[in-house]
Amino acid sequence: MADSSFDIVSKIDRQEADNALNQAVKEIATRYDFKGTGAEIKWSGEWGIEITANADERALAVLDVFKDKLIKRGISLKALEEGEPRQSGKDVKINCDLGEGISQEQAKKVSKLIRDEGPKGVKVQIQGDELRVTSKKRDDLQEVQQLLKGADLDFAVQFTNYR
Image (tube, rainbow, N blue to C red):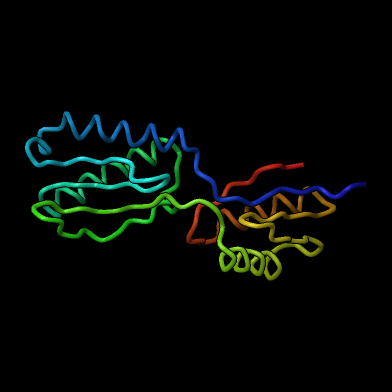
C-alpha cells in the first residue's frame, strides 16, 4: 500500500484579502468617526498595505476595521505583520504585510514538533516554503493535523494535497 501524505502550507487567498480591504475601505468611507480624519487604507505593492490617518488612534482604528474584515473573510491574523504607527508629515502611517510561505526556521520548528510529539512512522520533508508529511496510516496524518492546529505557531497553516 502506498504512503498517504499531505502538505503544510501558509498561503493567503489574494481575492479574499482584496475583498477584506475593499470592505474596510467602504466602512471607513461611511463611518461617522472617520469623517474628516483623512483615514484611508490601500494596497502598497504585492502584499503590502498602507494605512494613513491624521492621528495614531485613527490609524489604529482603521487597522482594527481591517482585522475584523480579514477574520470575516477567513484569513488568519497570524498572516498579518503590522508595523508601528509613524509620523509622516501631518499624517500618521502604518505599513502592514500579509505574509505568505513558511520560512526555513519555521519549517524546522514544525518538523521538530512533529518528530517529537507526533506519532511514530510519520516522515516530514521540507520542500521550499512548504512541508510534506507522509505516513503509512491516514490516522497518523490526521493526528499530526490536530497536533498542529493545537500548537501555538506564529504563522497560519493550511493543509493541502491530502492523499
